[in-house]
Length: 259
Image (cartoon, rainbow, N blue to C red; front, side, top):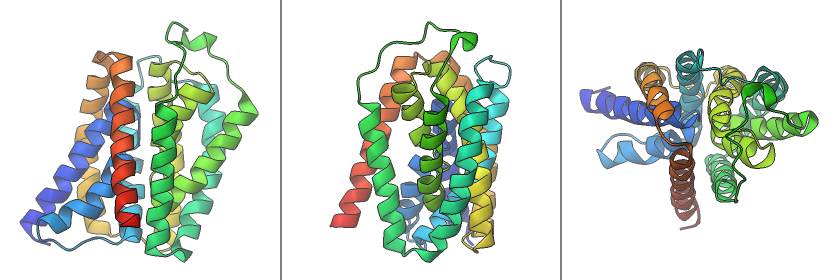
């Protein structure tokens, strides 16, 4: 592995993880297509979809830890949401990540394209302003939260994404959780999901260890910086930025799949 390859991987991990910490997602919504498309631009070997999903799954695990650490004293973590959605998404991600080893490269990319498209649509659905509620005043439909988390776990387990980019719009749009609580709590649920995703990818041999290590180092450095930046930004700006990011990624992935 030459120096250029190391630098490119580090920058992909750093940029993706900074946005991960800032927006409350695991970062794979950005890093999955970056890992697929950026190395070949520099004349470097391209990763397969299975390798990208494996690297993403392990990297998201560490990015989530770093993000949670930055939010731990902010008072935005909802324990009930973490228990109900975390338990369900853990089971789903284990099923999805293990099952992904039986899918083709194209099927893994299609799964990612579908997830990104759904997330993009959900982020543009009009939402009521619910930021005025405190942590203790937040209520949600528990069975619905668990079912949705399980479904997200299966899909995100396939692509190694941990589901953060779907959890955020689900919490905001379907469960009506305030934005800052959503951002912090989704990181915790993403962490639980990434445990299941990482185990499934490791067991089935889909992880390229050295690139994963480089991405992990970048994540540990960048995610806390992103979380600090996120606390200082207006929540409406965060939502718009995330929606545009997901929409752009979905368009690019589907263009490559179809064309």
